[in-house]
Length: 237
Ligand code: CDP
Image 1 (cartoon, rainbow, N blue to C red):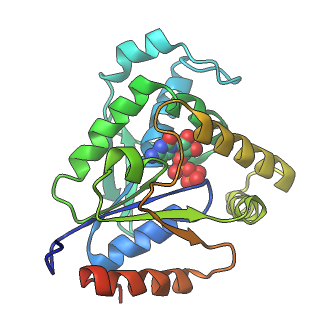
Image 2: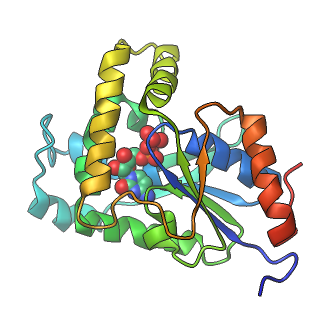
Image 3: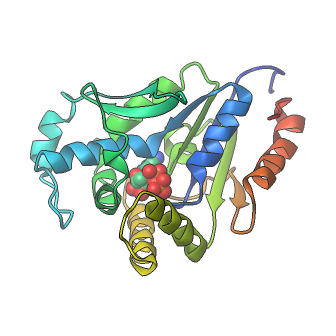
């Protein structure tokens, strides 16, 4: 039985470039909750592995070596910068920009499919949920990390719409990737994420689907409010 004014965990899973993180950030802000980007942790491990020679440009991973050092590294989020944005840190250095490159996007699924990496990341993620009041986005939050989350949302949109969004985002950052390259990379990443053995990308049975192919962010928030108010007595203003 849900108690009015109790804090909840909102798990937002779904495909690459569905706008999960922008949506999750807004929801967390509107509810006064903490936002956690689980993908950033997989990206941080990938960045560490790449810069230390544990994964090559073809995605071949030196697993034994990586497993030996993984527990010695420290990854955490810290709000910094003028707008108080949450940034990803690796061993004390901010790596927020470095983990968003196409190179890291192209390798991350190879790192994220390794069971010991998932266990390492899950431990960090579960600690963040101990006090509830959390909005977390990813691929397996509602299925594996917080299977008891009070609200689960599964976000999707057509591959072409998602590739267009990612392409526009990369262009703004000055990247040279073509639309076709972005679309192919996105489909490849979805395929690896959906078919890995441990905790693949899949909709939790009790997740509510949000297809935002033709929705604005304002419409997405209205959609969510229609669920939050009657079920949890919560409202994003
Ligand atoms: O680029 P986008 O925001 O769509 O992805 P992300 O959330 O930054 O996640 C990057 C990658 O991390 C995904 O493609 C997955 O391979 C992996 N990931 C995962 O396996 N499980 C999660 N809970 C979150 C991310």
